Amino acid sequence: MTFLSRLLEPPRLRTIEEDERERHATWLELFFDLVFVVAVAQLGESLSENHDTEGFLKFLALFVPVWWAWAGFTFYANRFDTDDLAYRLLCLTGMFTVAALATNVHDAFTGGANAFALSYVAIRVVILVLYSRAIRHVERARRLAIWYFTAFSLGVVVWLVSLAVAEPAKWRLWALALTIEISAPLVGWRLIPKAPIHPTHVPERFGLLTIIVLGEAVFAVVVGVAGAEWQAESALTAVGGFLAAAGIWWIYFDFVDSEAVVQTLVGGLTYTYSHLPLIAGIVALGIGVKLSILDTAGKTGYADTGWILCGGLALTMFAMAAIQLATPPTLLDVDVWLRLATGAAALVLLPVSGELSPLALVWILAGLLVAQVVFELVGHEDHVLDHTLPGRGTS
Image 1 (cartoon, rainbow, N blue to C red):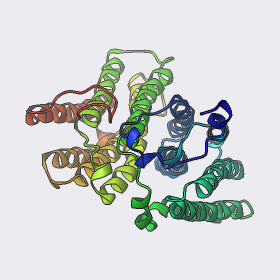
Image 2: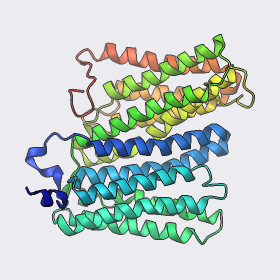
Image 3: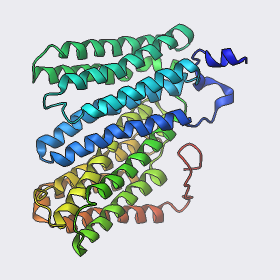
């Protein structure tokens, strides 16, 4: 391959090529993840500042377009990435638009709605340009690429119409646009087998995103409480929060089965969409730990925020249960019941979280996760700990 052809290599359907049975994330994808996490961090900071019920609902609402932006680039790259010059330039442009989106997260519901919408539209336009290349060059996946291009274009049109509409109708149009975009793989499911996803690349990409967000959650806690006056209670709360994060890491990377991605189409779609509440829950859990530490450190304005902890953990555990539930051959096995039980316990604690001290609540939730890890370690006698990236080991 000449230097010029390498720079201008057109897209191809890499997921069916025999010489790419095992494929891993590129450095460009990792770079993109780090930029994306900036937007996630901004969402978490917004929740930290507006930690009432309305703030939590707004956090979840804005998390959807942010997560979908990441998913859009990830699944295009999974199928069509040839790492040529055009692809690199488009991805770098997409990263810049994601950074712009991050700067507009705080004001999306307070006067900066149009700036947020325009930055999201810019992200989707880059995706459309990428799919136009796939339509032109990849005959086998052309029908799927045309379907995605059509659905995503319609979503962009609705986003643009929202610029001329007053609130709250503007937000309803946002919801409509996101529904059109996110439902595209579900409506066009018959086209997916013609252009399947790569069986090792997708679990690795989601695994990398999860580990980065877990790290960001710990980082947010450290930065958020750096100026707090540490006491025994706040220190113990921090320890409990770290144990909770470690428990989620252990469960996800050692016991969540990524085989759902390739075993059935329903399993693959469930695996994909379940990561939306899973990642949002991890972020909320980290913010909940931060607010709990601030409360125990004597900072005012952070009382009765433990419900964010409970809501975050419930989202994460129910999402992991859904992934396991969609993985044949078993359905309601012990792993599913454990995750459902932990999520249900978090929901039971949610309405009474204000009656418990932050220290007690954090340790109860951490204890539930640690107990689940221990139970699964004992129950999986044939389980071999594997600390490689998803798709690179035996887990």
